[in-house]
Length: 556
Image (cartoon, rainbow, N blue to C red):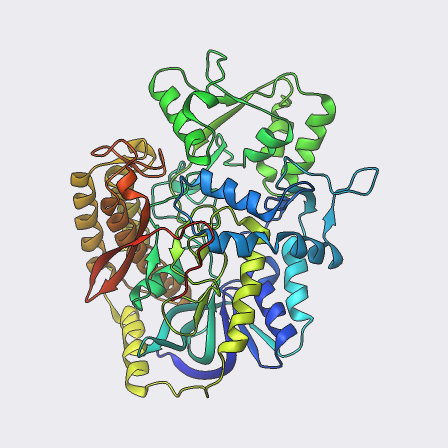
């Protein structure tokens, strides 16, 4: 199969039409008349983490609280390894974007006095099944925004440490795009599928995080030599057993506490940070006091109804489970379990190392949402704010003409892609993906290793991933969709190597379960710093940086 070359020019290229991407396009056009192109692997109407909806906006500053309170909360939850400057600039915009969403048509629940209905002090309840179509329409409503759906961006075009654009392929037709741009925003989301999931075989894509989020943007940055940060702070979600539905709605919405099989409340025994809630569940199970639950027996019938509706907005499988079993949470506690680890900068601090404008260490490349590091607990509204910040900075950045791509480099990329159409079909993507997930699970702290790893096990993990990288280069494709699967596997393998290097570099256990190093089981003051990395000549070089302290601001 020969790929047809197509050349596109734009001023601002946005890779990923999810939460941050759509909002950034809208924000950019409010400050500039320049052209915007959104490249999306699926369709912007129903893509990204919000494709199925959500029942709350989890980052909001309630009356009586301040943005600094949110910074303090996120810093404590991450045991200090955050960028306070990024958190503050994000928190200051949270309520503004919530008001904008409501003006665009999002239903935010209100009480009899017309005030937002909050869950705790930092989120508001919504009817959010249609939140992604609202974001997509908001982007389309602005002029000079082009949307390229069903296009898979797989690599940056970089020269002299400056972004010039990106390469992409059609998902359904043999087309290779060479997209030139003055500035680029990476908003591709985080990474699922690196580790063996809770369910295997036919149900292996029944995950908490979208299975189509493969870490593409992170992998592209790694290969291009961008500096990455805190990839060792993995995210492990505490979820409802089997359905992998969120538990925060139960914990915050009805005050459900974590209990073991003996009925003992154990959550405070281990701590109440996000990682400690998972860790406590693992420890109780290992001690023979499992299974573990969220204690819902005794809640009211009204609360039962509220939970049914809430989960329909984001995880309908849980609602169906309650209805089919005819055992509502008021009469049966909800069993819980941890998921496999993910790399998600919207929940933890992992991702690109950025300055306060969300510019990466590659000139003209910005990052927002789950790929932007240093700013955990951003969720939906925080991703929107970061999209705004990056878009405004991109407007100021674009002064130069669009650089012409290198013809020889384009030919190399084209031939490499086409080589998969003539390769002999000896291995399959599924087989290598399963081998990758098994290696990460057993040797790099997956579910079946109780999220633990050692220096020795990480060496073995890296060896196995390197072997799979070599094997993946020989994979065969018969159509464009299969070529996409090969590229997605390559992205995951690239990210696996960096995650392993980060896990090995941090010689402590700062976050139980998220990074449980058995050779260094305690937290150490010496490691109150950022673990960063950069790929140089095929090897990952670890860079440690001092913390950005309270009141300080970091710029490249």
